[in-house]
Amino acid sequence: MSSEEQLVGASQEFPGKEFSRAREAQGLSFDQLSRELRLPMRTLQAIEAASFDGLGGPVFVRGYIRAYARRLKLDPVPFVTAFDACAGIQEVTATVRAVGSVATTPARQSRFLMRFGTVLFLLVIIAIVIWWWRAQYSLEGVLIEQSSAPVAVDTADGNTLILPPLNDPEPTAAGVEQVAPAASAETAEEVSLNLDTLESAPQKAPVEDEAPVLAASAVSVESAAAEEVAEVEKSLRIDLTQDSWLRITDAGGTSLFNGIAKGGSDLAFEGREPLSVVIGRADAVARIEYAGVPVDLTGVSSKNVAHLTLPRVSLQ
Image 1: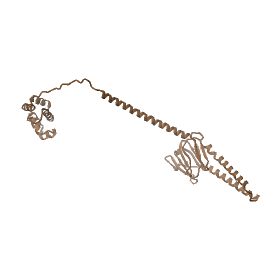
Image 2: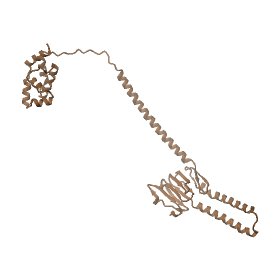
Image 3: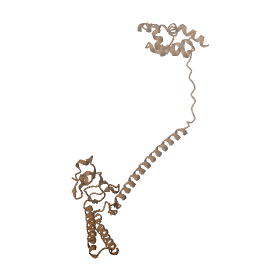
Image 4: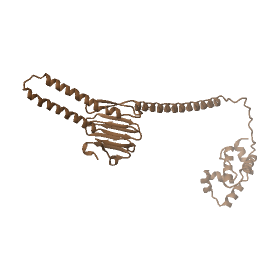
């Protein structure tokens, strides 16, 4: 039997009036149902009239009947069954063939790749952590080596002082106090040179005129020695209770100190005025003096960092 003959037979016994009564009971119009179901009005009218010619094959008619029945809150199964019975359509069940085996190789491969990627990611994270730790450890070692190295300081008179390391319990007092003996030695050498020059000079003046010359030379030597002593007395001294970063430069741009000074250190520096001083931790300074006069850091500290210049006129 062809599809058209089946639809003609179904139109003779299909209960299409049930759709009409349900639609009228709910007060629905074909226009409203057509918009909601997105079906042409002639399709809905054909279902109620049990006239299925021109609606397509039985498969399409079943879909129309189900959609229309659900919208009208009717059970679509009896209407579909009635349509199949009227049209003489028998349900055909397809034979299910057993599948011999299911290939699982792709799934196993995907699981293996996922596990491999996870392990690789964890190894990368561990490597990054180890690299960061070693970098921090090596940086700490470099800082310790720098802090334990001796510090060279150029003074204004051209001498170079070698200060002990910051971890030395008595860092710089002995080294700086050696300036005076060095200056005295240089002064003695200058006196001896002046005396040798005077002795080797030709005798152009009377003997009695040589005494004032020698006296003047002695006076100049004494004044030079006094100036050297005065320069030593005008040194900068800093006592620290805790570790602090210091940068000290003189007027000529010579760096007297640039680094971390250890707590408990008693530091002394000399240089051409004015001295530029930066203290990275002002509260770590127990005492700061310039030329024997205490220096107040209260007005020159900002956020515990002190910036000050030390000429003679700036002494407190």
